[in-house]
Structures are given as structure tokens and as C-alpha cells.
Image (cartoon, rainbow, N blue to C red; front, side):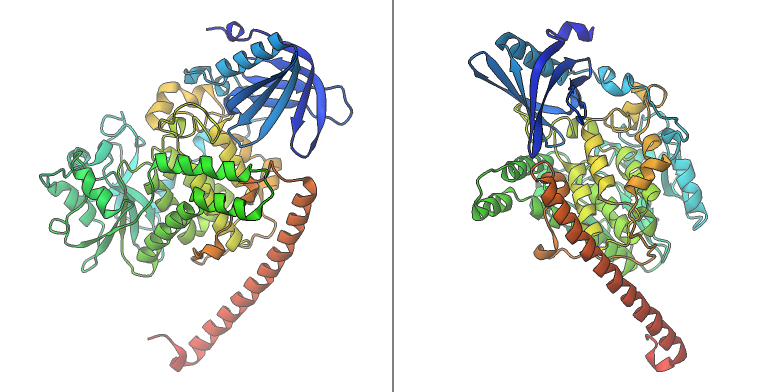
Length: 549
């Protein structure tokens, strides 16, 4: 298919661009195979370059011979284009609708994009499982790297290499895969250097109504326990949902077959509920009625902050089991590709200082999202404005980033990256010139040939000038575990994503100044706390009576 076949009117002069809190711009609108471009001869005016893949929905309006197209984007901005001539407006709208809903992944912009910057570091080779395993080997010899899934025949959504207990052979893994949803047998997610406890992730066990049992599965997860220790299974579903899953062939681990493991159920909502929540949240944020009560009521009704709290609470629970209880943890929901990954990755943010660095966070996204099989292609195919019937779309990754932002806001000196890094990841997950978030799993990315045909987002991010923009100037390396508050007053609306297109630059400047003052105060306070901790540690070493029992 040629893109030219979809472009009925490639160029229109005299188009007026309207954006909230910005002056109108008149210029020439051009359509290419992948971009909507508006250029103007007005002084100090930047060109608008909008990827068609970033367009979530459009609306057409007509007044006489003047037509308007309202473009609603996946990054949540809304722009209006006034186009002279009804035919031109209809043609432009028809072309945008066709170009923004291409079914073939290979026709998307990352396959045509050629970087204008020098690729110093190939992001596709930056975070490989074999390299991560070398770090694990330096801490323990109890795990091995298995290539049982090298051809994706065991599990389509897993990477070719996975870390498993050293005493478990590949034949056992194959049997366990038949007992877990989607073949997602338990694999290592995180090793806690402090006490040697681990966190694993998997799909739900396929026990069904008959209570099917798999001794190989029991052997695998028991192999992670230390003598005399118990473990925790954190099921991200309610007891009722887990019970209902049995009727469909799913289920959960019974205490009779897993006596060394305590099962805990948490209530993290499924994808369809999350998508509806996002739609209601964005609708509330775009509400132009200036009634604070109405706005707060709509915000609460969206339940977005409730979802943030549920996810953070479950992640804190997993981290607490590992760090404070000294127990290993297995996390799963149903498929193991959504809420499971939210919990395992956030628990690592809490426990592991390396995950709070720029490169460490990239590594986390690679390991716990991309290589772990989160279906980005379907989850991020639509955002909050699309008029088409929701299928598998859900803001799972956006919710994870929101949770990270909540922790970053509470511990502003403990993260090497700033809010801009999180916003960048949100934007590129939904529409990008890079191939990083294309496909639904590692098998898809191999089939599409992304490593050979596209550029990695990390190649762009790890350039010196971009790193400078994304670095938090207040960062001080903190080796401690950080425990975020999940109290309602501690969790705020992420304005940098949900309100950034709805505020004037003056409001932004004032908010930024206030944030700087708060951060400086928190930095001073944290410094005093650290000094007190050092003094207390010194006293404990000098006076035996003060030492912990």
C-alpha cells in the first residue's frame, strides 16, 4: 500500500491552529505518510509536527464554508485546526482517520525513521539478560540462566533467556509451563542482596475446578526457600475473582499443596476497568466548568487515585515481605503481564537503589515490562479519547509511571531522574519514532525485526545532552529502602501528565517555583535525618546498652 493513496489533499494554505493558553498560528498544513505538519511564516513560531500514530480521535465541525477539525491526541493534548473550504476539511479529516488507524505494524513510523543524531550507544544491546545475570552471579550461585525458551516454544510472552533456580532442569520447566497460564512458569524477578530473598513472577496456576496439581511447580517455587523459611504468594486478584477463574481452567495455589507458602489476595483491577477510569479522569481534567466541587467530584468518581493506592499498597506489601519479613515472594494475577509487572517493578523501586538511577530504571523497564511480555501494542493502541469500542486497551504502564511519580515526589532526592523522564516514557509508549515499545512481547519484536530495522529509544535517551535534561539536580545516592506513604493525602493527581495542556505558563512557573522551595526544604530535612542516623549508629557501637537485641 502507498501512503499517497490515503492522502486526498496533501496541502492546505491558510490553516489556523488553536491550542490552549498559546497564541493562534496561521500557516500551511501538510500531510505526509506519518506526520501532520503545520508551518508558519510568523516570527518565533515553531512548526507543529504531530505523528499520526499519536492521534486518538478527531471531530469535524462546520460553520458556513469554514471547517474545523478537533484533534485529540494519545498524549492527552487537544488542538483545533480551522481549515478554509468544506471539501478540503473533509479530505484532511478522512486522510487523518485513515493514516492514524493503520493495522500493519510494519507501516508505522519507526520502520521509516532515520536518526538525525549520531548513535553512540546501540540501545538494543544495552540491557541484555546475560549481562544482568553477571551481576546476579556476583551475589549468589543459586540461580542459572536457562535458554529453554530460546525459540519461544515454551512461552510466547517470555524472553529467550530467563533466570531460574540452579537445581531445576529444563525438562522440569517444560512441565511447569503446561501448568501455568500462557506457559509463564515462575522466573526470577529480583534478588535482594541484603538478605538473599527473591521475588518471582508467573501466570496463574491452571488448577481448574478439579484441583489439578503439578509437583514440578511445587518443587520449582520451593527451591527458592531457605531451610525453615516460609514464602508469600501475592495474588493480585480478590478471592472471588480467583475462585471464578477456576471455572475457566485457572485458579490459585492451594495451601494443601503449597504448605510452606502463605497466599495473600489483593484487589488490583483488570484492564477494562482501568481504561474506563482513565477516560473519566481525563474528562474531569478537561472540564471547563469552574466549580471546584464538581471537578473534585468527577475526579473522585474516576477512581484513578484509588487504583494508584491499590497498586502501591501491594508493591509495599511485596517489599515488606522481602526486606522486613525475610521471606521470598511469588507474584501473579491471571496472565501475569499487567498487574503482576506493576507490583514487581514498583517493589524494586522501593527496595533497590539501582532502580532509582536513569540507567537502572531503563533496565527495569526492559526486564520487567518489555522482556517480561507486557502487551504494549494492544494496551497502548488507544488512549482516553478514542471513539471506537475498547478491546484490550488499558493504561497499565501509565499507572505504573504514575506510581513511580508519587514515590519520586515523596523522595525527591533519592531518584537520579526527574519527572520529565517519566513523561517521556509515557509519550513514547503510545506514539514514537523509536521501535522500543512496538509489539506485544519479545517474540513479536524478533518477528518484526526491530533490532535491525528500527532505532531504540535508549539510543536517544543515553546521549549526553538528553541525560542532562532528564537528570534530577537534587539527586543524592540513597542506599536505603524507601517506604512511600499511601495515605490519601499523600497521593496527588499527576499534573505533569493530566493537566499539562490545561494550564497557562504562568501557572506552571508559579507551581515550579513552589516545588523548588518544597524540594529544597525536603533535601535539608533529609540531610538532617541522615546525620541523626549516623550519630545513632555511632552511639550504638560505643554503648552496648543501646544495641538492638
